[in-house]
Length: 284
Image (cartoon, rainbow, N blue to C red):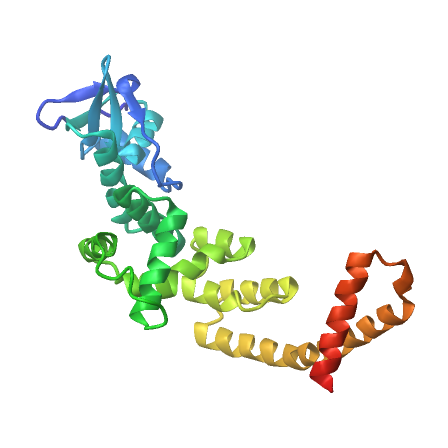
């Protein structure tokens, strides 16, 4: 049986008139289940839209319901029309996205940075730099030239408004997720492991070892057990790393013995001789 939309305030719009807006949400899980519910009960919560002109409306919030309604075979859905500027709509969508219960830590991190970027009018890279400078000043390892600035105050206000974590906690625990190796980032995005495990696994640079430990985490290895295993791996590799310089020194000495200095370009020979003189002085 084809579902019928529930009208809120008597306002409905055809799906063809609705335009999905670029937004941070990438995963739309459970669409089949939602589509089934819509066939049975209709769309229970109106979509939030803003007028674009020419009879078209941009979806501000509710794209998951929009997609499910299409799957359910509906031709129109209930909407609530609001007058918002393009920037206001983007901010609303970002905040709405961050309220999702199924948001994983990586998505949340990207979403928070996108919100800060939009609100401050800065690139994400500039926002990350601002947050890192704020933390350095907070720890007393940098001159105070950011704390108390309008941008820093706005950052604090936004984190308080979100109510999820402090900006200090975000910088300490979430920004490192941006530099995760691809395998860990993808697994974290899937929600297969907690972000604390991903950060611990990040310490293991050997890809084969990291992959093996990742599979163990997926199979139920606890964070405490993982930390112990990672510690074992790092300790086991330490002696090998300590021997590396000796082998490297030998390679340099062999290269020097085989080098015909008279054949080197004048500038390069002068540079090598200067380095050797400096080395001799240090060891003398």
